[in-house]
Length: 93
Image (spheres, helix red, strand yellow):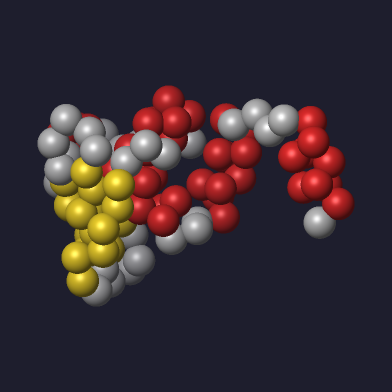
């Protein structure tokens, strides 16, 4: 997972537009992320199309964060360093 895109995704706003569609804003321009019948997410941005979805764009990652995707949350833990006190509480759970 691209940690640079993930760190940017955290700052985006995600709004559910309907079943299987989300509006993502907060970047240079708004984009729409949709979920296909197979559950795969796709985006209308240039970054997604340029990489043919092989590398998740920040908009798809923002939606995956909104959906509490366990892989994205695990990757986020690698990017964000918790203070020592928060680490102790997290281990205690």
